[in-house]
Image (tube, rainbow, N blue to C red):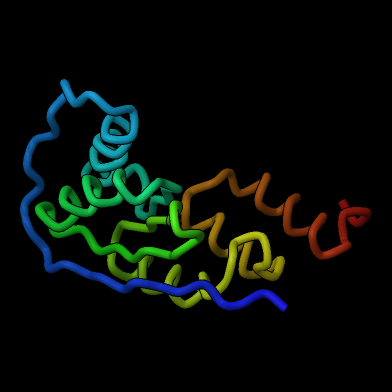
Amino acid sequence: MTEPAILIEEAAGSGRTPPARSGDATPILRLFHHHVYEYGRGVRALFLMTINRRELELVLTGLEVRGIHHFVQELSPAKVNLLFGRPAFVAVARALVTRPLNTLSPEEDFMLGTLLGYDCEQQCRRFLSRSGQAERV
């Protein structure tokens, strides 16, 4: 039986978003700054990054400085899933992500994918496939 994932819950208060630095050296920080840009513009409300612990330290600092809500799901001694975004979205994601993502029910997977802003039609097709109802489409 799979043991539940350990969650490290953190949520910071609201605050202004400092400008992102375009010259950051690591690809993870460039991706993170792009996510922060999308978050600030309202393009998406929830983000998921699978990163190593060194990268986590850098990204958490950026989230805390900006007051962006987040939580960390432990995957292994070396890797974590970091979910961050609007407070209500993070709260729902925290309630859904209580075990490894590949063990979520079709309904939980659908809800998480929708919250992450994935294509709605693709999420519907994925749900139907995972729930054994794909032949209905």
